[in-house]
Length: 77
Image 1 (cartoon, rainbow, N blue to C red):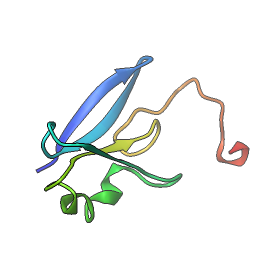
Image 2 (cartoon, one colour):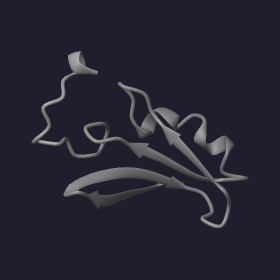
Image 3 (cartoon, helix red, strand yellow):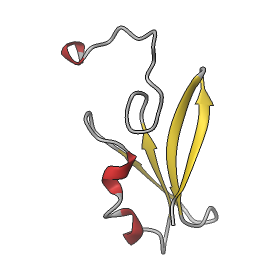
Image 4 (cartoon, rainbow, N blue to C red):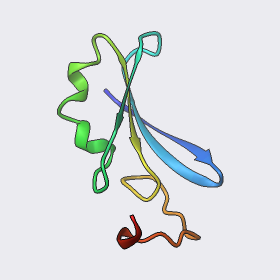
């Protein structure tokens, strides 16, 4: 079962879903512009037998904090 973990980076709380054995090689799943860590729920279990699976929520996505001081909009991306 995945564990939800949070870390602070530059004052922002970021979310990660940690799944598997930490002694195995890491498989890092990173979502696209409109995704989040949960979009890999269907595929992550396929890698757990051979990898330590980490699924990230980027800033402003999923369970990670928004940057209240950011001025970037989707139109600027």
